[in-house]
Amino acid sequence: MKLTVKLILMAKKHWRTIAFASIGIIGASLLNLITPAVVRSLTNELMIFNESGPGSMPVNVNLLITYSVVLIGAYLLRAVCRWVALAVSHVAAWNFVGELTAKVYEKLQKLSMRYYQDKQTGQLMSRMINDTGKAHDLIAHALPDLIGNIIIIIGVAILIFTINPVLAAITLIPVPFVFWTGTFFSKKVAPLFKINQEVLGDLNAISQDNLSGMKEIQAFGQEDRELGKMRELCKHYSWVNIRANYANALFHPGIEFLTSMGTVIVVGIGGYLAMGGMGGNMTVPDVIGFLMYLGIFYQPLAVLSRLFEDVQISYAGAVRIFEVLEAESEVQEKPDAKVLENCDGGIEFDDVSFYYNIEEPVLKNISFDAKPGEMIAVVGPTGVGKTTIVSLIERFYDPQNGSIKIDGTDIKDLTVESLRAQISMVLQDVFLFNGTIADNIAYSVKNATQEQIEEAAKIACADDFILQMPDGYNTMIGERGVRLSGGQKQRLSIARAVLRNTPILILDEATSSVDMETELQIQQAIENLTGSRTVIVIAHRLSTIISADQIIVLDKGSIIEKGSYDELMSQDGVFSRLNRANSKH
Image (cartoon, rainbow, N blue to C red; front, side, top):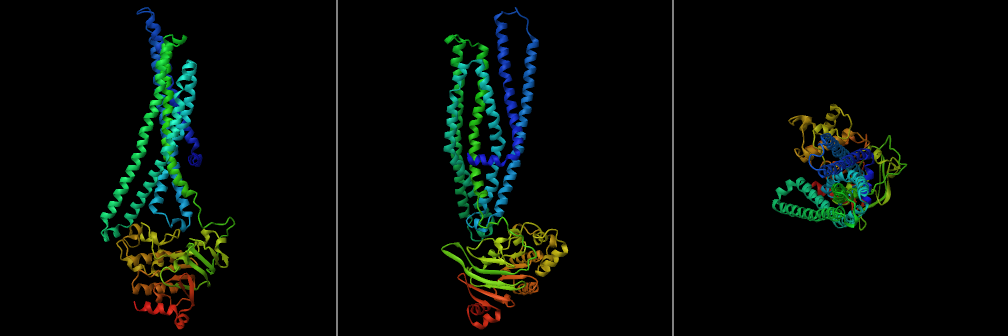
């Protein structure tokens, strides 16, 4: 129950609304008590009337009208109370679900890239949307029902004890069995609901992967294989839900049977007492009233037993939610972190080592300096740690050893927000949002003017192809820029980075998806930017880095050569061999 209580505590700003909904439940239930009282009183009047003989007493029409009016008023007020309970509780529940979903998303934004290494997007989406949605039943039903029905149980118990304490005590015998059954159910069925949520997460994950990779599925003719996997997972998802609901199908009739035993006790023992057995002094109206009160008494017990199901479903979601909310980010900001202002763009790597897996180091003892305004190129074979270097500058990860400094300050002493505000990145795997071309270029700049957007596009050599689009800068590009070529997406990404105008610019294979003519244009644009900002370039085509102030050659995670283009070519080392091999293609 700890996680469930923790979830409820997170909804404390809605407690007043939940309390108001509970009042509605209490009001509706208390108004239900009027009916047994009226029936008991009416039965007593009718018995007196019948015992006196037909015609001996006038028909008390006013009494019948009074009872009828009282019942109409009670039923009308009960309807109002039920509306309050249902409507208001859902207001609180859905507001809380929205806040909880946003909270999970906020947490996901704060987690470092290492957290995402072994996570599927679909699984995380399931936690953020499906699992948070399970909190609705907890807030809308379980919590107000718990509060309201406990009060009703206490109130009705007092009433039946005033009618006949002995019979009331006997009719309470099934109560411990009801709660024991609920506890047993909760222990046995809770894991089933957790499995349901996990399988639903798997279903979301494979759906997201397949929809994102539909082009590859069709291109390689793997439709049948993926359909088979989806059918198997859907079949498994159906089975785990059937299994959980099968448990419910056993539980709820069992509770109904136990609560029905109270009625059996009243019929048997109450009837016996009303017939004078055991010196009983119960009247027929008492027995009828007792039976009706008992129905009201056991109804909340049955409701409370159903709450076990709501709580278990909410708990299954809460486990997965708190796995995200309580996850620790590898990148931690110090409480006294400084805000980086007026950045010049100087970068220093001092004996930096990094690994994803301790047995497989990615970077080993990396040291180099980039003075403000310099262009630094990082080259080497695939998988030697080039992209990891720029990821460390942005603090997507923290190195295990050594330090990285910006303008002489260790980046671990800076706020992450202010550090990243000084850096623009163009990644090899370009991500564009579903929107217009202009929206994507201006993504990182608030209130960018059309003139600024167009100027950035011209620098990135994107203006020409944009103007050929049907709606120019207002052209919708589709999800992930599906309507654009790889080269067009890359140039938009460069324009986005140029518009941000930060003192540090990182280009990770920025020309890998463009033709030779466009590459030369982008290369010229990059050279125009050098001197005004520090540029870190990861290059596959070595011809693009001829003008770099310093070229760093990586191999197996270590720097093996360092110098200008001419210096490295004169050494006839690894760089010169790479350059000769590159020029042949």
